[in-house]
Image (cartoon, one colour):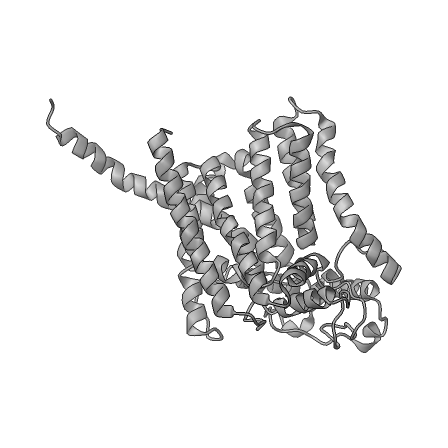
Length: 423
């Protein structure tokens, strides 16, 4: 690119990021210095409370009995320690001001817009990168969840940074111990924020290793795994010290799997329909044993009712990719859904299809979408859990729109050029 073109690109990107930042700060101010747990972000009540409790010396505890089985002032391993500790750090510095946390996560959400540009520029073209970042800047879900106190924003940012690092390493721009170490650190952050990503990480590392194996010491691929292990180990040891049972990070999976595949759904999953845990299970009073017991019960439900499990999986996919208005949503929620995800979805699907010929190059994106979707399709899903996929939908939609723009403008440009008088 010429110097002038680079300046114009950077100027446009700056304006896009400014718009993204402004919209997110406006959303943060609208939600304010309070925790309301708006639809789809109810978990921010729990994470914010844990952050406040930890910052004020009460540890990772709740001041009262808490969903789903947590006793008051008792240790728990159900909710994410990492995101709660993140908010605890903010409250320790600024005092208990959720608005401060919203502003910081809003800045992180703006950084997501920047990362979408960088990845789009790298995988497609500068034009696609700019268009994708512009869509992301205005994208309602990224704005709203960008300033709610849940795991989606920091997880998505860490994932995109890790993916960008891997893309640059595959291209030979970064190599050696430092490159693998940085990749491992970013992947460790993703694991600490969203444990389910452990199913995707081997795919990413294998894809990268196969591309660089001729120029790289094969032992280097172990560095990210060691870094992840070292990052997870303190929490695993904490869990063992409390419960005397092995638990990698959080004691959620068994409960979520059992609840998501409960016969009470009657084959039609609804994300806000939860079921009472049997009293004999609650009597165990051990986070790890409770969730493991519920996991076995959930598996039994799945095995004994495979047809119902299939129906629940399909209905969870429906919920995951919901883009149409629904009767149980407000007018505002319906409009934002249709004019954000609903608007980009057809262009994204076209982009997925036409880029299948580049599958080897885009393997991490395609397989992350498959793995991430699959995990939530068989357990529990809400639209919020799709947010880490939305940057990739945006990228493919931007590529489709950019192609359409070129098809519409290039013939006209050619015709105009032919009609210019010759000198």
